[in-house]
Length: 536
Image (cartoon, rainbow, N blue to C red; front, side, top):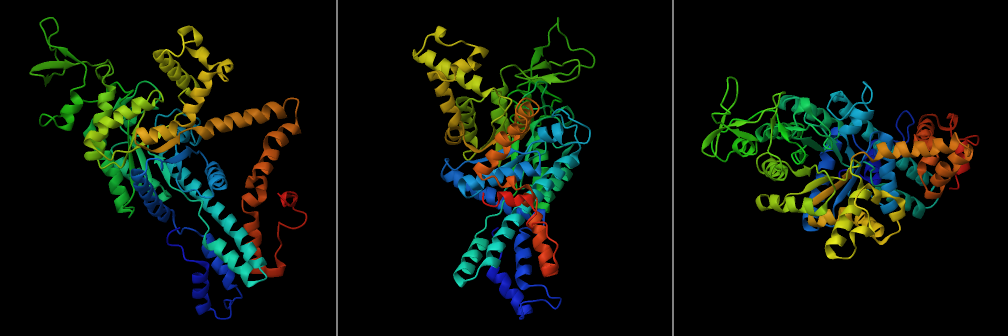
């Protein structure tokens, strides 16, 4: 935390008030200092303000060096987020460059009171803010547990050198709190509804909001059919609503991620009003599918005509009143959406929802966008909706065929490429190598600042519970739990193996000692079974 005072600074301030080292009620100055340091943030709005600065610094670092891209995983509970950040800190020694993605899909699918729902903005608005709040409560508790452990070392110090080392560890502690990119879907209503919801997400701690250009009341998952986009002016108004929410709450470095679904969206709900040639409305209208007005196809009562290319034409219209775009125009619409979001809407990052994971395709669109917006940067969804194995193997096969390295009969062209038989082949190895460097490649070639996976903890939970259940309810019984869970926790150093400690049991004991001293009735005594893991 950038503004956090050191232990020595807090201790000195307290000693100036209580020279005896205790308050009149007998509370230790050291204990007060510990609680102040454990309370790493006063409010979640403070979190939003600080983590916005973190993201801005990371964006500047990426502009200078594209190898410094950032990553996140989508989390649908505070515990998932907490364990992810702990794992990163064990691996790297720091959580810098790591964010948390809050997926609207997972809120709809797992976190609403109405049951499991598709990603169509049918879940309660409050569920999104509630999850942000929960995640930061979990991350702050991880801070409390870790700092409490550091203070145990301070209390156990018997020499000045040991005390100095313990204080240095406390002062150099890095919070588990990291930026959240929160999915606000299409704003859950008009621009005012977007603004009101944005404020709630920011107050819960979100420093970055991701909003998409679909129609709120017809919103679909980006990887499903039937997507309907709004005119660019409408979307820009929602971007402004998000910016006003950030500014009102004093999060002046708040980050807006503007997502376009136009690559897969072939419909719009309305034809915007063009005021002059070349404005946002006319640039949107030009892609509509139209029909010539002729004697055989005259304009009829109640039909709409627009003046385009020197003549009046009829926009095609479906029975539900929606207007289709011309086929094959998605790529051009994506590029224009992105430029408008950056230059007219003040967005900070872009999100292009694609139908396959293809570095060349993404890089090509970004190159076009950067002609008008040179510093354009993307957040990219490494989506579980892609069949990654099949897609990458097909890409390798196509390239090797074009280069003459293989013959068509060497590898099948279809779902058979998924077979485990191909895992150990040269093609299988090459596809896996490309998967391993996929994020590095799109960061370097396609302007992707942030790589995320939207739904990993959804799929991981399903797989892990299935794995344990198959063994536990099958032949392995307890061996299944010990072998697949506990033994791995111990050997990897996963702190959750001591589950009582993980959820704050030691925090309770420490506080009891602070107020009761030797009278404290503690949970962590000799009979606590967590002591079986003390040596791990």
